[in-house]
Amino acid sequence: MDVISNLLLGFQTAGTFLNLGYCFIGVFLGTLIGVLPGLGPVATIAMLLPATFGLPPVSALIMLSGIYYGAQYGGSTTAILINLPGESSSVITALDGYAMARKGRAGVALATAAIGSFFAGTVSTLLIAFAAPPLAQVALKFGPPEYFSLMVLGLSASVVLAHGSLLRALGMIVFGLLLGVVGTDPNAAVQRFTFGIPELADGIGFVTVAMGMFGVGEIIRNLENESDRSVFVSKVNSLMPNREDWRRIIGPILRGTALGSALGILPGGGAMLSSFAAYSLEKRISRRSSEFGKGAIEGVAAPESANNAGAQTSFIPILTL
Amino acid sequence: MRLNIRNPADFWSGLLFLVVASAFLWIARTYDFGSPLRMGPSFFPVVLSIVLAAIGLVALLRSFTVSGERLEGFAFKGLVLVTLGSVLFGALIERAGIIIAVSAITLVSAYASVRFTWKQGLAMAILLSAFCALVFVFGLGVPMPILGSWFLD
Image (cartoon, rainbow over all chains, first blue to last red):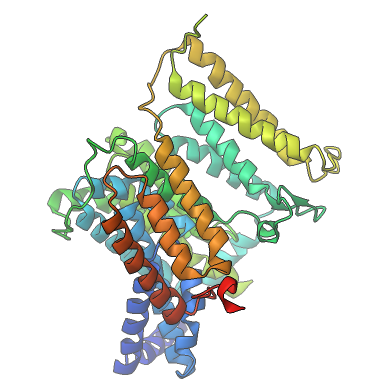
């Protein structure tokens, strides 16, 4: 059993007191930076990379992974507490997580996100260790038609996400696509809609749009009825989900992990699509689908599990192809 | 004659979609359209704009026949001031530096609230700009000047 002995060697290396210490520092710093609105894992790693320069290679790698996961969790934290997703894959978490926080259940939402992420991350890491090469074969079979179908799936899933008018949801999807064409045309390399501003040549970043739509939108909405709005400053108490919560999140976490692992294997699909897909799946099959978007705990558990599983298994095409 | 708008939410979003679609169409007219076989730079934007315009038109027409949600009123003051604050920040960050830019965005956005007082606003501006300078410039090394190019000559 090569795999087992290799895994054990890995645990032996990572399990030393020193490396665990670096891991802790990495997660701590990563979470600290990741909770700053708009800073996702990639930006955080880029900023903290110099901190790992003096370390031996293995410790540096361990600390960087710590930073990555810490930053990812930090992104979910801001999504839940102030409706500002730090990266594309935690946008879905903001839908129900923020609603839960407004109901005073921020602690439970945060814990659910952590539990789901932990479970999904562990399972999909094992999946990588045991089944990466055969899974990579599947990923190779993906051509343009399959990608096209995947995008259609993603866009139709966003209609499911919307509660309210279907027509306006469709309009906003097309509006989003239009924002996506800003920048350099991939075929002719002509700059479109850039107004001669060089910063726009790369297109409009996802985090920028999310900040504007969710963050600034929320601020302006709060200014609408200032006299009778409830300022949202509830304390984060009771982190642990109760028995009822546990019963409700086990299914979504398992399904989210499975779906995320499967979609993550596809090159370019990754964490973002899997969180969308997991959320739509839960909304479809849940008996409480009317609660989604208003603080359903399933709506936090499923996408958080899925995006972590997806982020993990997306290493399969990177490492094997 | 007064128009009988039964669904204000649909009416305004329809109008918004139409305006956005026309803006994209207007700018896209200078680019090459190409053909479905060899799509030019404006092919995709034009097709999308037409779809968006169609959706907007349907929403607009439907708002006269099917009744629906009411709007709770626009927060124009908030909309203008918060947007203005962000634009000011972008314009000031390189030239005036992070201290002035952060103070500007804080004061302008906070002014949108009915509970704004100069004392609180100024305290907030000082605290936030110190925090941003310490964390982002000194702590994380983000390339933003403390004092911008206006002060360097």
